[in-house]
Image (cartoon, rainbow, N blue to C red; front, side):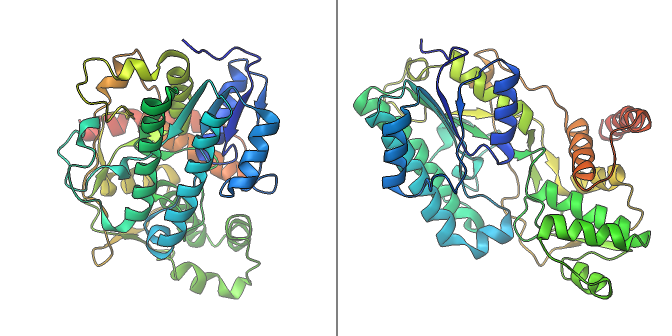
Length: 381
């Protein structure tokens, strides 16, 4: 079995993103000290020549492929060509070079968007290609499907050791809070936070938040109209969709641990046993707990402390009405998640406030989290 040693040369593609930053922190925490990271200025992963030059020079032994162009419904609808092209290029270049330059092992990070919109629940790995994909994120999903097939096909044809994880909806530190691109959790955290600040008349803090997250120097007189364009007022927060759609949510720190676990303990040959046809060799990673967008919004509203109303705009798309995956295969190897949704949301909100200059996590906040968690568990039981 190819296992990483503490001094193995590891290439982490996408180290600044939500997953990559959590993975980088976890790798360092576990004592791995020979990690190669590159920014987009250093290397454009969508350019084949640049990637080949990098591999020829560095020859990484292990690769975590986290780099991707990702976003929420609004971004997926408005940048369909970009999502398909850029993700295809990044995956193809890195996976091909990993084979060409003798990488010992690669882990590719995919997405549950690869599963058909009407998949039975919980969705197992064998449901791939069993139906049509959801329209809103089909280009992104097709790119992530291609990544799965690239890994599997190189393994079959060239005897490489490339494995793939399919995580459910992710959240955590270093997520994107740009309301035009953000996924549901960072979008809701920021919307409720800004609505709370607006209700308290904290215009200076609002302007600081907008500058940090949107890179805009806004005038105080334009605050209300700017926030209103995103469905944010002092009395109400608008949320796209009916609120009936449900999702699983996985904290990025849990995913980081899962990726290192899989890299150290699972090989491609382990995933082909008792298979007549070698296909669907990827692994789901999930919490096996589904939460409706309505309940999620109420949880975040409570954590943030916004006292106003929520308006669910049913004229806007819900996306797939339900996502629930089965991670029995990964659990059979001995991995399990640790961070509950309520704890993870609180951790993320504290990180968001601290980044915006909101102060450190206090004893009072810790006591609030314990109380909130107990009350929430009683409410949903």
